[in-house]
Length: 612
Image 1 (tube, helix red, strand yellow):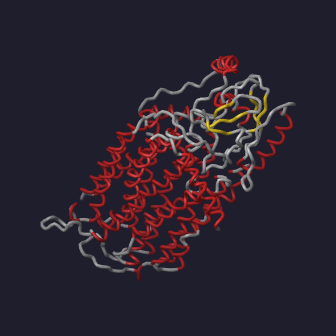
Image 2 (cartoon, one colour; image 1 turned 90 degrees about the horizontal axis):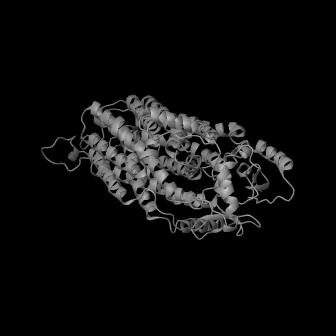
Image 3 (cartoon, helix red, strand yellow; image 1 turned 135 degrees about the vertical axis):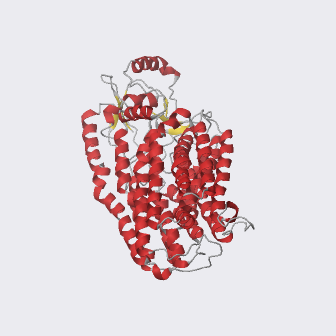
């Protein structure tokens, strides 16, 4: 155990070293992300308790509203995803924090169901839909290919800092400050005399902090140096010293034997000796037919134009596969929503009003912050698909503890095992969502790819409300009332059946991945096509650069050789010419491909073959 753990620590250290020289904006974005996610996690954790105990909604009604809230975030994310591409990260985040902060204030002050629902499905949902995509795109802009994977892992850890704080502060306000400041003469359900409402006001301060921090970031910071290495959450090993090195401008580079360096940075260059040939190639490329981009407009018509343009991109077939994976794993994602929608009410009704709802919830982000960097660094040789597949079994079986035992320690074991599984598979979804996004279309592309995940929230909320009402109904105890005492309604709660059903539903996801993996990961077919293509197309005297293959992850190999032109041109320019030649051979599970991936010009002369 010492060996693998030591190697994981070493790779984690190398990943942190790769972030050295990154612009300060990256670290500010991490703090902004924590503020934005605190508002999401805190409201999600309080949602069902607040609606039932403060406004009298039934379990079924609360579950449906919880699900519709997730659908609203999805709808706004899809409808306004292109706004991030148009307005930019900074302006979008300003709008997000204004909407989220005002919405939280309305929730805290409201005593009307209609005003409550207006706030939830209006500014709160819209603000949350704006915030997350903007942060993801910001991290992509503030990093480079060599350190982007680890940067997303740190972003994931920062998100869990917010989740951890939301759990701790919930118990502080729900138990210790249950009656708020207990000001005489003020109603018991006023903001100052209600722990729940004070907790909502705390989110306004988080939104204000994020708003102020957003003034300090730059939309497009200048490039800076960082250590060049492959993503620690990716699946490629570092290239050999003669193939991969730190360039003068901080970018990564790839060397061809006997040729000039071809850089894989945002802007490709070649050696001065190849300048005439480069100019000739630039002239040829400029003559190629280009797909016109839609003008950046606001409104539904603009989004239709953006969507139409995105559908015409060559990489859209890859996002279809990701969406299929999202649909298959909806039940797996649902188990995390049961942490918000089902577990708090189950704990209160089984173990009393003083049950440590937030503390048990905080086990999840605490473990994630510890395990994700270590697991990500130790498992770089495993593919995204394998990590998602194997980790899903661990998470899916976690509710079985509560199906077997109705005790508080069973809830702790449930969260511990769930978190272990999450640390294995969940971070890989970041690489999925961003690596397939074409440059300048990250917002709408990310929204399309993640839509099935948020839509699963409706299924979770509806199922949660039904299961609670059927197997663990409310016996009339309202923990939001002044001094309710540690009443226990456990004799009404049939937790065994409730969590057994949830376990069976969740296990559908890993078995679905197992059943459809030949379609989702056509590695064998790709390898066969690769072999045939290499035999048929390899010219004599061709030079090859081989990326080492992976045990346990054959789908991570690029399945064919692609042909470079005789003259050395920039790597980015070359790949833009060759998509039609190799796209049918590319293993689409490899998320480390460039976003501006590989187009080919018909009739272009081809001569040098390179395996990438």
